[in-house]
Length: 111
Image (cartoon, rainbow, N blue to C red):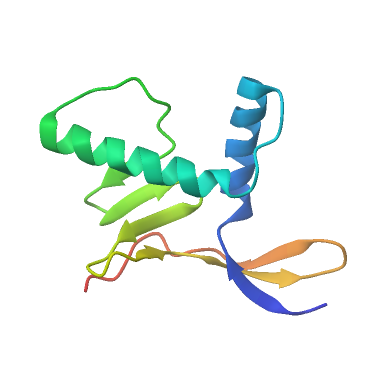
C-alpha cells in the first residue's frame, strides 16, 4: 500500500473496454489497447500522406498540436530510434484499488 507507479490513464481504457464489450460481448485483454493504438497510428499516417479515408473507429488521432497520436492509452509518439514515447499517469496502490495521483501531461516537450 502507498506504492507509486506509472501507467496509462485507466479511465481512457475503460472507455475502450466499454466499446469493445458492446462490439464483441466480451472484455478485451489489457494488451489489446497497444495493438489497437499501433494499427490506427499506421492508418492515420497513411490517411495523412495519401488522403485515404478508410472507415475506422477513431480512438487514435494524430494531431500536430500534440506532436503525436492520442490513443486508447493516451498520448504517444514514435521517436527516432523506433521506440514509443508515452505520457503516463502516476498511480498509487491503495486499499484494493489504484488511485491516480497525477494525470498524464497533455502534450510532449519538443526534442
